[in-house]
Image (cartoon, rainbow, N blue to C red; front, side, top):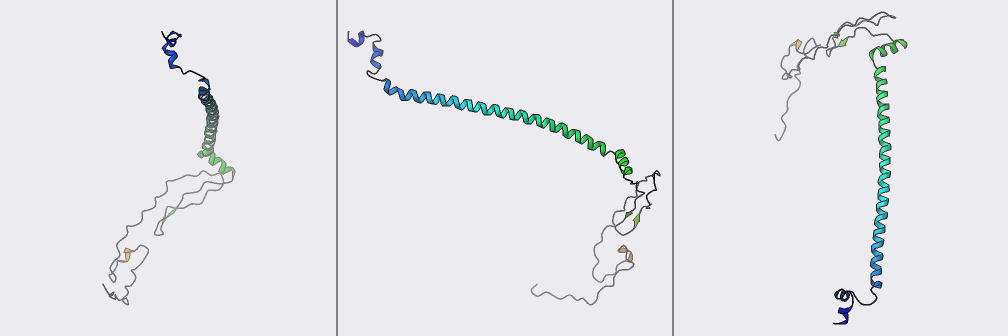
Length: 175
């Protein structure tokens, strides 16, 4: 048997390099240790920033809940103050009185409804449904120049304006 075969490990002994191999492995081991250490430090920093974001999120959710409750409370106050009886009471405290029946002006200048003055003091006011304004009359196509028009065709006018006879059409050159 050869000397290599007699050594313990036999064939495995031949695979291992002979001589100082530790000097070649040191930079690789240091690189692996540095990479693992920097990875662990990176995970620690990432975990810390996630926890900080979680605390900030919890604080903002709590603040949102508080502000929502405050908004709902303020909306209830507005609803109470804008109720008709509350508005009536506050208006009377300011010396205001309810108005009478309104009147409306139509597009042709006619008055719809019968206006009445506001009551004096604390007299009760009886409200009636106001007369709805009439829709405007449908527009008619303009008549041809010089054609006679009916006097009632134009609301608010007694007669149609006289047709102009001094206007003459002149042909446009090139057409």
